[in-house]
Length: 126
Image 1 (cartoon, rainbow, N blue to C red):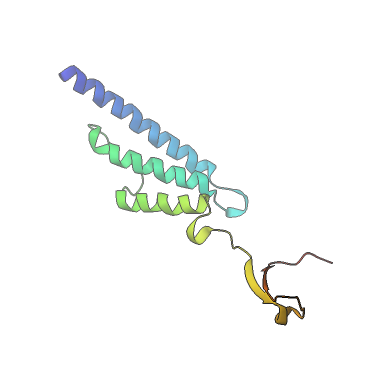
Image 2: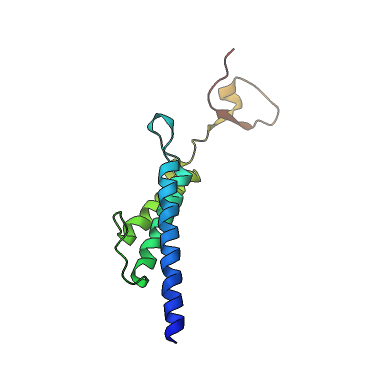
């Protein structure tokens, strides 16, 4: 049984190192021109850091990760950046507004009346 525990500890140590290495690579890749940040790489980086933080206690004689390793904070960061990467929630692109136009507001007359929805968005140059 000790052999299994030793092998498991060795494998956890390898995975832990691989997670940290991948997170470090993503940290370098996420920085774009002009000081902006790639949301996809940042979400993945925080996800890997979260995974490494969760695995860390199972790896004997290993120092803590070289970043703030509060798992709740890391999970929240990953969730926030996921929304940015997938354009969800507050990061969703703004949709054009719909405006209800009736025959009286449009200055038209039709038999039977009615209403139409029009899209209010940016106008194209004339």
